[in-house]
Amino acid sequence: MRVGLLSDTHIPVAPILYPEILDALRGVDVILHAGDIVLSRVLDELETIAPVYAAQGNHDGHLSEDPRVKPVHLLDLEGFTVALLHVFEPWDSGRAWLSGLLGGGWADVVISGDSHLEGMEVVEGTLCINAGSATMPRNRAPKPGHIGFLTLERGKAPVGELYHLPDLDHPLYRMEGAVPTGENLQYARHRHEAHA
Image 1 (cartoon, rainbow, N blue to C red):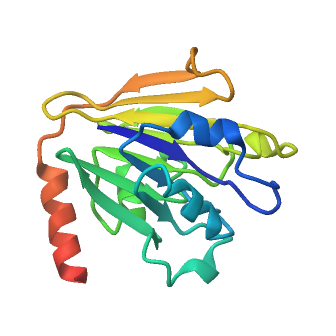
Image 2: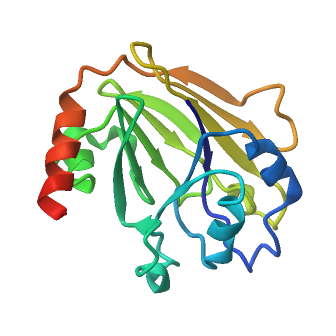
């Protein structure tokens, strides 16, 4: 499974979802947007490419009724527990603090945004990816910025990649996580059943 990753589009502060972003995401199986969407039409546009899940960012309170948008998604993708939320930092604050942001659980992969600073690190066996900003990289003037991809294949380690558009030939980051044990998936399923 190939997952498209982006965050902090801030439409209409950034005027459009740039064509480079849409072109790069074509062919993915699902898209994860890590929040600060602002206008729901961004999700509608992304959904013409693939199904979309989005985290509720600090500029997205008005999107709380949109079923694609939640403060935290814990997704089962190809046997991996993938968490999607807007803020998941600082990564060096320890598992106890970070798991509190996930409702007390843990995940195989965590996708976040907020800072507009792209990055990737393995924390306590979990591949953590900050997708940066697709439209306002590093908090600069609107222009094509950063997107990422996550490759998930059962029985193999997850692989994350981050790119600065329009260059899709040279990843800024490429990192592998750990092969999932299933422990995080059991927690995610239990949490989902409790909230259903």
